[in-house]
Image 1 (cartoon, helix red, strand yellow):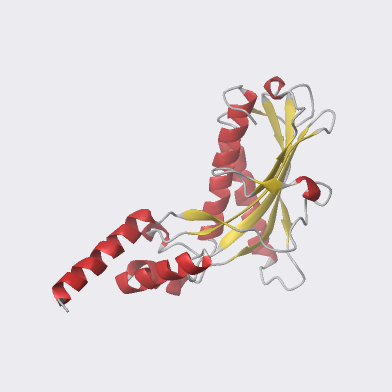
Image 2: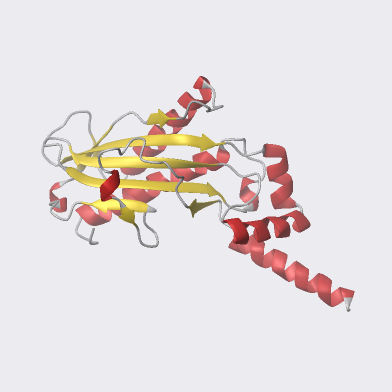
Length: 229
């Protein structure tokens, strides 16, 4: 066997893996979900590419009437075995609320009270998973470990030592309570080298930021008439 060619091939694969890896990626939702969306759970259906993993959109909603958003405090759901401290829980929901506020404010007027043209957004964070910082760094920096991690990702859908988060969201007419949107999604850390040195909740934060950006972009596209629900 030509070791030079083998090394070149492995190097090429590693480079391909490096360029293809994202900071955060969508994953299958956990079993036994719908902790927050208890009433809406039966309405959820698989979303298309670029959408939440599970979603419902009210076909009778008159979207173009909405140009304001009222954002409720983010809720935290964890089972009785959760190892997440109360302080970390608060840090995570505060961060989620912050990025939602930042992203939605780019597209809508943020208000504190119900009224005409106001959507009410309620979001819950489901027992996020911490990454393993030291091993996480090794797995994305050392070429051989990156290659092994990518093989695991192909087999299981997630990289080793990564964290992640699952979220549930409900959008209603703030004045009438009419359900407009319900959605559930889960994201985990990708194999990007940009995530190598982040803290244990970095993957969860990256997921929250991605959701906030996606929500703002999607809601604006629908309410402006630029896209169909």
